[in-house]
Length: 225
Ligand SMILES: *Cc1c(COP(=O)(O)O)cnc(C)c1O
Image 1 (cartoon, rainbow, N blue to C red):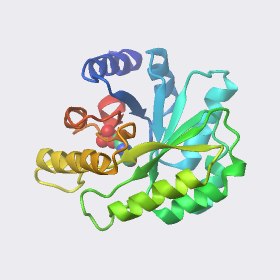
Image 2: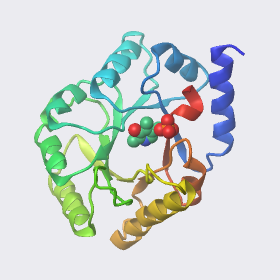
Image 3: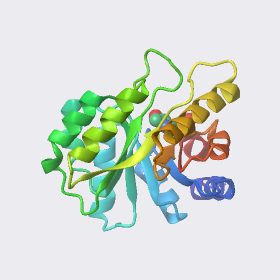
Image 4: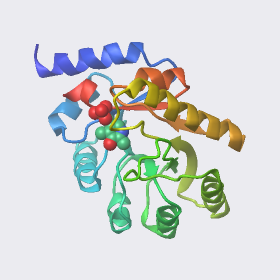
């Protein structure tokens, strides 16, 4: 099978499982050629986890006048990269605002962002308790973050929802994924903001995430590896 056929058949079989969830093709570590194949196969949402890579790739497609793409930043964001992120054409979502400090830094730099549409922000929640992983850890901090975003009356950013990553090092990823995804859904219930989207699920656990009502699944290796 050639590379185009490989990517397009993987995308087609993934799409059958999506239900109401939107598939984000995580193209990190993969080439512009692979992204082009996925786009030719009809994929429009792409995720990247490094700001510089995202900028390079988004600028490439922008220069080609390809304007039907949506870019999702899904990686750990350092404050000193916010101004670079601001330059990304067709940046639609930031999935990984993992602290109140980072949210504050982002809001303070909103004047650098000139995208036509508002950028949806997901607050990343640490549902697995892993120390090394980023993420907001309490509902009090989450409420503070939502209040910060809402009261900023930002012209650039809008609250899109909540994001989480299932436990990474685990002997039972299915059980741990269920725990994390259920936690995220419960948090939304506790907040009583049903319109919040949930960004959860990766290659190995996206089917479970969809069972728990994921709005966006972030799938990389199952498409591009
Ligand atoms: C890399 C990455 C993904 C995709 O992971 P795969 O296992 O390749 O599907 C999803 N979400 C985040 C935050 C990532 O960094």
